[in-house]
Length: 315
Image (cartoon, rainbow, N blue to C red; front, side, top):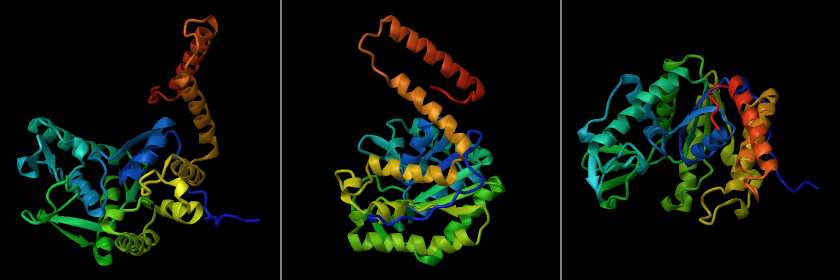
């Protein structure tokens, strides 16, 4: 008896291995996947400006990096004791104007550096809804809980999304013509927009993205949204907010991503990293016992051995 619909996945090339350099941008789902890469000690960077929910916010960061456009004082505002930027997530907020400016511009410069070296770029889009700051007429990446009356809400058209996706691909390939681009739609539901509005938003993203993927080389789609909606299909795979996938769902999607994008030879090293991670997290009953000291000595040697082979791995 078959109790689950299954999405057919293929092995993709070029596969990700420990020589790959990964750059991930987009919604909080991108951060979940980046967390998996970090756990297994891959070379990866994620969201230098924090979580970015819609494609125009990602494009703005890429344009700034491509054209070396730094942030200035006019890109900041002060609210609730912090300097903030409508281009960045609240985790960059800072009580010091000098420090937030430095952090923002470091993010722009590091994005360029990372993209020039990146073998794979993973882009996760959460929504097609955008908010325009009425006074400045700027489409913001984050409203920072400012009064709703200061913004105008709208949805990006399919034509605008097509144009945005093409621009994103063009900029990424200007940094590295051989880069592999992996697009995905976040399974996180933006229910604050409304149930119908969330579906409308995701539909816009799907309709615009698939023709772009099909018509560009080294450009792929990974079905993270479909895995949650069509394979898992149950609220037990969500956190208590009933909006974000829980750890079980994230682990499930990661397994599918690993099947598609990571080679079997690389998985052997991943298994070794996992074993060492669990060993380092082990909490002994008696830390000073001879058995535990011997265990730590052996573990340290194994960590050093792996570190000699992959100097970038830090445990």
